[in-house]
Length: 448
Image 1 (cartoon, helix red, strand yellow):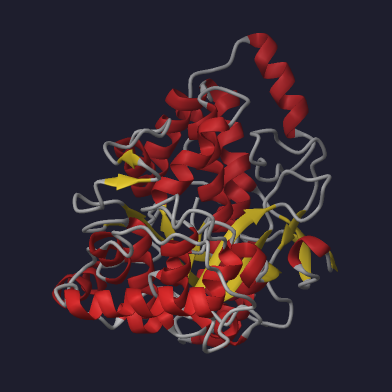
Image 2: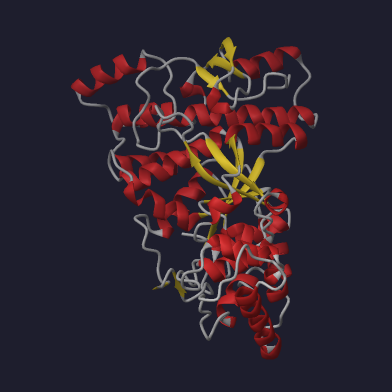
């Protein structure tokens, strides 16, 4: 839910291709874009997935593949035991998503993606990780992370073209731009808006108080003054409340467009416990952050045998035909990852200088380059169109797979002759046409 009506005030942010963000970060720093992801939001979203066996789990699987394709370093964050006892007027409890958390963690381990258990709410922890520089941005579905102190938040990862189901773009919210924009909201101001117009912990807010009025109060400095008050300083809190009521009724300082004499402020507003959920959330200590930094391992190897078993059990990708589907869907993402790692190794002087060795290693990855393109799905980032051998990328033994029934063999042989498969969309349907892969790496980088 987030803050009621906030997007009308702060706008949609900057709409940008996630791939473009990833490329720009790699070119600027030599490493992938690192993002913290509130896992509970993903698990909640995919409950409505359709198509195939175990559609929610299937959607989660393909989202992970897409992160590999974008050469992104994700850090998945799970809610911890000290999250607030209620949210959106409902008690918080065990995860009610269609995928149990232990199963999501199992799949993350098989993909080699790190995850982290927050002390409290994952959203607040994600914001802390961004502020501390452990990640570059937070991927969420609302801007509550800005309210928790994130400087860069990405939301609404979704298709840009109406004809596509494949998510390509995000709305980027930069805290500095949000503050300097028309709404003029900083972190403390957004907290006040959540308290007055309604947020996750108090959805009703102040009755009949909309986000426009709340933003006016925030721009007048009521948010920053409120957040500076100690929880135990009841006298200062009461003085703040009386000042707000006075200005709303008289508009003496011309903070508001008009007087609001009829607006009734509840006796308990602002509730100190609700305020503390925003200003003092349960997040990792300095020692906890240092432990996380020491233990983080980016670019861990994928566990091919376990992933293969998982897809067979979860999606019924069984026998040789199922193994081929596993290879075709995983290979494009894995190829891009391998090329990116090769580029990083080249920049660090970690590759052979022997031309014959270089040629052999590169031929094992890319068999031919067919051309290049610029496409709206990547905000016209230059791409190479290449061909490669999927079986040479995904390390599983097809000979160890159980043979197909005769009818399945005929169908799969015909499908295999079509060439490469792309990554399936959110609905779990593979592209109808197959052909050379559009390699989404910037073509001006010679090591790519």
